[in-house]
Each structure stands twice: as C-alpha cells, then as structure tokens.
Length: 385
Ligand SMILES: *Cc1c(COP(=O)(O)O)cnc(C)c1O
Image (cartoon, rainbow, N blue to C red; front, side, top):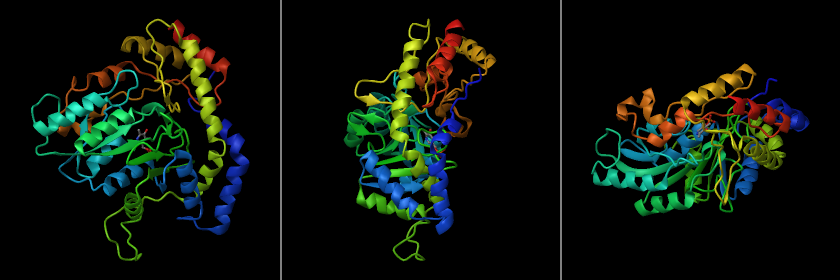
C-alpha cells in the first residue's frame, strides 16, 4: 500500500470548484499584481489569527526577510534562534549581514529552550564564554527568532519575558504553525512580527510560493508594506528605503481564499489523525511519539516520532520504504553544523539536544485525509521493525 506523505489531490477534489471560480475572477479582472484578493485575504487571515494587521508576501522566506528589514537588523547585530529548523530561519538573518546565534532546544517540544536563550544572551553580553557563541567579534544583541517547529508553538510567555528583560525584538517563525494555538491565542499572533509560509506542503498551502507577515504594530506594518515593494514611499516613484519584490500574487491569494474555507475543519481532522497515531504508537519499545503540552495546540505540519537511536531509525525507515511509505528526516543537520555557517565556528557538541534529535527523528505521513486503516498499516510496520 503506497501512502503519500501529504495528499494534496484529495484536498483539491474538495475545493476544486471554488479554486477554479476564484482563479477565473482574477483572469477576468486581470489585476495579477496587488489585486483585490490581496487585501481581502490579509483582512480575513488577520482576523483568524487575532492580529491587527497582515501583509501578503511572496514566500515564508521573504516574510522573514521583510520582518528583519523592518526591525532594522544590520551587520554587527546578533539574532538568537534555534538550530533545529529549516535553513531559511537563519539564512535570512545572515543575508541581512547580521549573525545568527544558535540556542539549543527543549527535548520534548523541539522548540528553543527559554532558559538557554537567557543564558546565551547573558554570555554574549558579558563575554564570559559560558556558552558556545559564533566566532564574530563585537556583536550586539538585537532580537530573537523563535520557531514553532512541526506546528507546535514555542513557549512564548517565557520567551517574551527573556526578550523584554534584554530589550530585544521577537519574531515568530510560524511557517509551520498557522492554525496552532498557545494559551488561548492563535499562532501568528505571538511575536512583534510573525511570519508564515503558504508553501504547498504547509498546513495552509497555496499552489506555488506565498507567505504572510502579521503584527499589531501600526508603525511596523507601514515599514513592512514599504519594504515589500522596493522601499516605496508615499510618492510611488520616490523610494524612501531599500526593499525587495516581496508581494504575494493575486492568483495565489485567490487559491488561498478557497482553501481557507475548509481550513478550520482540516485543523480538527489533523488533530484526529495525530490522536490516532498516539494511540497506535503507544507502547512501541524504544519509540517516543510527539506530545503537546497542556494549553498548546499543534497543527501537525509534521508528525515526527523519535527512534531509540540512529540504528533503530534506519531499521524503521528501511521497513517503511520497502512498503512504499515515505519517512523523511526533518532535520538531519542542525543549522549550527551546516556548511554555509562554517565561518561561525560552531562544532559538534555545541547544541547537543538538537544533534541528538537530528540523529533519531523521522517523519511519517500526516495530512487531514489519512485514514485509520492506513495509520494502522504504518504503525504495524514501525512496531515490527
Ligand atoms: C518552510 C519554512 C520557511 C520558509 O518558507 P518558504 O515559503 O518555503 O520560503 C521558513 N521557516 C520554516 C520553519 C519553514 O518550515
């Protein structure tokens, strides 16, 4: 039984009529760039997330870039983040000329550890060498990018307290967590600026690249808006700062409008699929199923158990592969050990929890339309490996 990792076809069959209708509307009016679909979607998703403003962007990566530009991040700045994430989180920091400083994760949630975050900021400020830091002189602590990995929000009460204590900005990388919740608030409302992605495989995906920034701050939304279109000022041909071509396009917004119609229901279905996995994987020797702390809701962008060790993982992956079931690894190399960041001078052992997770973690198929029978089949293979 071949089981797809994410079943976008099943979803398309549900939204097809509305997607085609919405796309036809764009083809009829012809405003492919910044058409009426953009502000309509921004308003609708801001309301869902509980923020004052939203800004459609060309991708999750551009959303992060725009957030960093709007917060005036520049060479010499240190931005603290997790090494257990997709490359773009730290890549965008480095592209602004600033330096990513990696802080290890919590072993249960895989999100940045707020206590280690505080210690690392203290170490950077005091220069006492008590935690591993990048080999870059004269850095100034500027901000934090926390990531809601696999759809589970990070611990924002604790992270915000650390940010406030040190006077740092907080960006929430919610590329995987649109639809998640933290203590009664929606993901995407938990940072000074939040960035999400509509890459097709994310919980709310479009049919190409797309992303969005969220904020409550009136001044920041104006800066984000300007940076999104080449640093545009009130006079369209007098650019007041540098920017990028960071717009979401009208066709993708039209597609997202149709897909968002069924999104809240899909979040509930994802929860059910995760509950079924938890039940089926319970008691498998050496396996740790993912868990969600009290007061949190994951949107299950990925469902990632931990094997006992890398040898156990290899056995499981081989058994799954033999039956046509994909089990990709998110993420095999923590960012502090990626070649592109060699210059920062990090080494194996600097973020041991992330390194351990990377050696044992694997993902199994997760989407709203997975059937119990398919999940039983997957769980049996894992148990027998
Ligand atoms: C997907 C992802 C991004 C980048 O989003 P794109 O839309 O692919 O540019 C950034 N951060 C995290 C955590 C992601 O999962």
